[in-house]
Amino acid sequence: MRGRNGKALVIIGLLAVGLLVLGCDLFAIADPGDGDDGEDLQWQEPSTPKIVLEDLEWSYDNAEYYDKYENLIHDDFIFYFDPQDVDQGLPASWGKQDELEATKNLFENVGAANIELGLTLSDYQPPEDTDTEHIYNNVPYNLRVTMPDEDLIYVAQGHGNYTTKIDGTLDNGLDRWWLVTWYDINTN
Image (cartoon, rainbow, N blue to C red; front, side, top):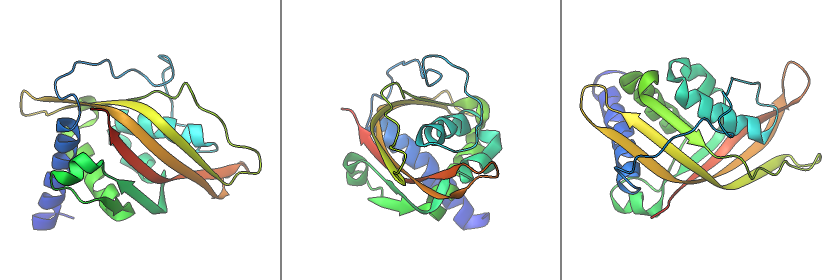
C-alpha cells in the first residue's frame, strides 16, 4: 500500500522498532552475532522449528528478500508486543497482515545493510517426532537498526517466545513448519 495508509504503516513500523528499542537498552552497544555461535546462516527450507527461527534471523539480515520472511508467517500468526510497549501506545498484538506490512515497510525503508538480527538458539530442544506444534521460549535477541538518513542506531535486546507448527509438507516430503506466534519480552 502506498499513499496515506502506506506512509502510516512505515511510521508504525519504525515506531514499533523505536519503541521496542526504547523499552530495551537503547544505546547499549551489543554484538548482534550471527545466530548459532558465529555460523554464517543460509536460507533453508523450514522443515524444523529451529530452521524457522534461523530463517527469521536470515530474513532480517537479508531484508532485500522480503518474500522469504513472508514465507515463514502462518495465516494464523499473531505478534504480541511487550506490555511496556503497549503502555507507550502500541497495540497489544497484531496479526499476519499488519506484521507483513510493517516488516515490508521497515525492510524497504531501512534496507538490508542497515538491519542485523541475532538470535541465540544454543538451548534449542527439538520437538518429539509426534509433535505438530513446538514452543521455543526465552530466545535472546539483539536487533540493530541503523537509520540510513540519520545518525541514529537503535539496539534492542530482549527475549522472544515463539510458537511454530506443522501445516503441510515441503516439496522434499518433509513437514512444513511455520511461525504462528511471537511474543516480545523486554529485558529491563
